[in-house]
Image (tube, rainbow, N blue to C red):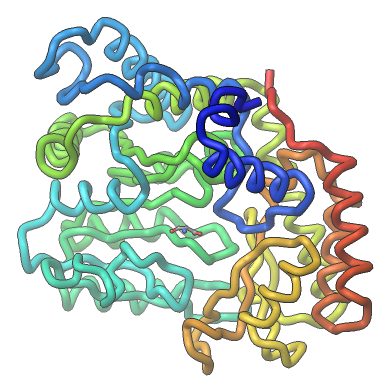
Length: 417
Ligand code: DSN
């Protein structure tokens, strides 16, 4: 592999080869990461990267678009089918870009968005003060009512919505392990005349695979997403519209020319490939297994009395309060587990008494290891090893050997045919 790169640029090759080995020998438990197929990689590495295609299929600014139109139309049609959407914009370069384009499509400067608090599972682009978005728009928040069960405070949400009159009610998260009550979001949005948007970045693959509810079924107006998490596609973003052509047109104008320049056609081709893979029945099995594996890991953590935010999981991720339960900070836990060959991330927990760069929690999940073919038994074993490492009851080098054996026994799958 990488024959030309190896010959022509040994330094970059060394980094790429090093990363290949790291991924092969270690376990990836960051819940927003996954392993794509060889077909997705080939599309990403194709000559489509050479092409400028500002505009949309059939309406481009430059010539030579016969094949870019073909590939973008394939991506759009497959995305619509996967998520039961009337319209899809597959050009956003990532999830943050998709959210930005969505805000600028729907809001004027100073308008208000009601989104989930970051410390309760929300995302930076849902209005954290460190983002430039907060210089332009006004963000107000909702939180969980009960951190031990994950129940959202819908009464508070309605009260804030009535008081603040948001133009957008934004659902979605990057660190929340439960399903939301979509009907409640839609009903509150309709009551105050807001547009309902769900950022499905983390759970897009679970929805596409029928293992989680589709927010469109409850009447959400729009969904934004990344394509590289549970959906197992290339790094990128997408915006889906349930039925309103007017909204879809605003989104298209906002993505281009409002925010982005030429779309990355090689990524769009790879999105089309990944969406094709997700339309296969085997993807439904994969999506269900992601959740079964996460629940198996949660059972192990529960049996060792490790506190999990919301008490467990219904999706692909777990947020464990390792500081509260085991007296080890999230940062130290991340480092120790990394030494054992397990990659995950430190994470704030709801109302964290510690600082964001050294929080109380760790966040981990099962999309990548499920792609490797892990089932409940292997997932439980990984969780046991994690607890042993965190309790410092086994040597990290012993853990690392076992993790490497487990990883090598389950090579990263390159085909989902
Ligand atoms: N960085 C992604 C995640 O890990 O959830 C989303 O921003």
